[in-house]
Picture 1: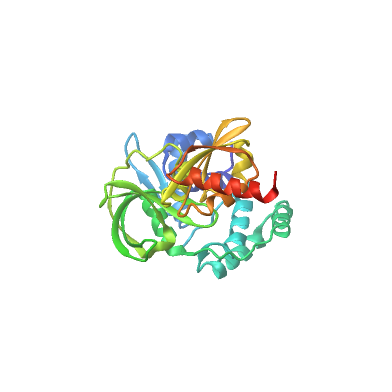
Picture 2: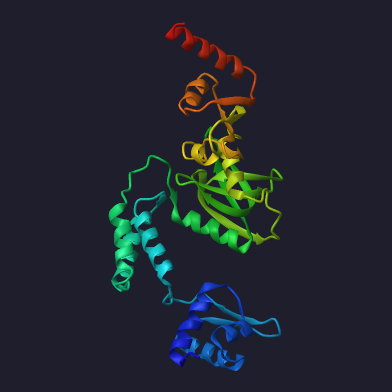
Length: 319
């Protein structure tokens, strides 16, 4: 049984951890009755926390947004994750948040318990960030998209393709995916009546939210694999499939998700789906992998190009 002050902190932590809580569930977690939960909610309201209640049998409680950000209660792992994330954000792919990330990190480190400081310090000391050449996205664009994904609201935005041409899109957003270098949005394009993967750095301005929608069945059970397939093969004019004599986990370390999809066949081999806009460079790229492979599916001309390069190299080293 918790004391009143400790119970209030536990109640606040639970309300911050999940969007909606039935009163009976909160009572069970805190080992009190529902009447005590109602009194504790009133105490939180008197302290300025906007706790909303829904009446009825299926009713419950939700911590709403107030005029000011209330104190957040983080467990040890969450505090370390936030500290590491803020350090990364200072030099990441999201623009406009470097200075604010440093300020937030300074506030967090000031109140970090002594037992957590060595963990955060060790990660910071052992990590170096190299400046990337990839595109950055504005934080306000990411937060607008993330909110629409969460609330199932349609989005409208301008989108530029690889040629620079811009079109207006109306979509039902599903999920943001980050490859480590770029941000992508998986959404159902209402104008084209199909699922599409959008590069967020090609979205112009901040997307505007519209009407709510009923979520559709996702385009694939594994969205990470789906996005990897879309960005590694679909954009290329020539697509092909190889069976490689190497374990999938080994080859996946050499092929980023933006360059190909690696699927395990057995413990000693894997299948790679990839593509290229020109067949001329493909033989030299495959040679760098350092593993034997068999062409399973190929566009016209690829096999002949591989054979031509192989014969040239064979002549170079003699009989």
